[in-house]
Amino acid sequence: MRSALYTAADDARKIDPQLAAKYVRLMTGNRHHVSAMCHIAAILLVRIAHCQRTGQPYVLRDTDGRPISTAEGRAIVKACHTVPKEVRKARTSLRRSQTHKNRTGREQQESHSAPTTRPAKPDDTTTTTA
Image (cartoon, rainbow, N blue to C red; front, side):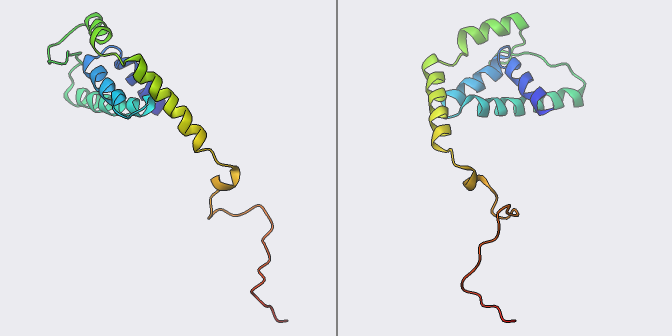
């Protein structure tokens, strides 16, 4: 269900000017695509739940609130609500550098509370008496 909602949000931001405007605000802020899409998916889920509860169809609206068609929505998004290429490029390079910087070996990724697969180390401080 999560991947279906993510895909629906990605498609909706290309048609719905209100969602596209929110996406652009998030991307021009310090968000990357996946984070922005999760925000859009949450907004879309609230709208879907409202439509389900009230029994009304989903209506595309311009940022000023007037109802529009799908073709008008696509045209408005393309003309007014696109992320500048330099912002998208900056987010991509930032994400790549953070990914490389935060890489750690398998030792650091293992849970400290999980059982170990290695033999236990002998402790020199304990003495055992027979």
